[in-house]
Length: 505
Image (cartoon, rainbow, N blue to C red):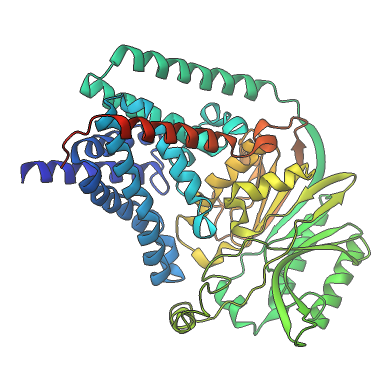
């Protein structure tokens, strides 16, 4: 009984430290301590009971850390948390089993297993690369520069290595050797970070105007006042034009209706573009006629218009949000559509794009990850691999007003910039509108703020972006580090399998 209480307290402490490291609390240095109680529990509980503790600890983190989902759908929050928590259960079980059977230091085991499971989490069931431990350090620039080598996974690896070293110190498990290795890793990470931060030689790029009109989601969904939505964007665009930008950007789906089909609004927008005399990038829903059944399919798109208002190109969102933009498995479970309608008050029917499209501005190419596409590392890496010099992330986070989703998504976007050594321009309807440099730095002057607030305000941000001539190893090799950790984990499992079993609880 006493041991069960201690194990429960350990799991609760690990969950608490993790939650405190992320917004809204932002006590990021606590993330180095967060793995310690969890790993101690995993070692003590054994694989079977450890799975239960790991599952419950992860469930607490996701239910609290992802509570912004409840603004749209409580069932979505619960289902996502229940599924994601299986990774926590597997984490405890695998680490506990390997470490107990091999008697190896936890520092030789835990970081590799953690990275592999995070890798699975980024792909399985459409993927959800959110709340990685490394993401908590997005503001610690020296620590995260290794992301251009190993991705966000590398930063998580270092965080878990520190926590596992603490566990080995507590257990007196090869302390000298473990501390020596961890110390060398820390020196490399910080030295590499300092060098990368000092070796940047940015090239001045296009001057971009980002319009944040702060349209209430209720007004947008109702669709009854398109003229007001358009008028506010035109007003702030005119303010931005006073600062002579090379490009004007409107956020995700901020054109009211369907560009090209909503005739009055399309004509007014084209007139605005022609009077400005510069290209526009406009987030809008798009409609296309299906040849098979003469019905329309809808896409979440970005339209690139030239100075005459003509469409130079269009890119459609490829990676859709389950239950937010489409209903997975509805052909098997028809009841799902009714549940989504009852909770979210709409049934999403968005079609995904087929290919990534690059646009060109003054000889410089850029890609447009839309909304949560910036969460998935492979999407941004693919854009840059195809030749993008910077990224423009169009978002409409008005769904999640008053939540921590804004700050958490910003943390993720920082890693996309560092991983690929490109600026990430974020254009949000209600925030956060900003320019993230290729080092992950967000300068105060590069963020739209009104009276010290960056969320739920309206205005414009006009700034020149700073291009980085470097190209990263991560862009070229992708998640090779995850696969390397996978081979290490296979070796650890094989070694544990051949070791003498130890009785476990």
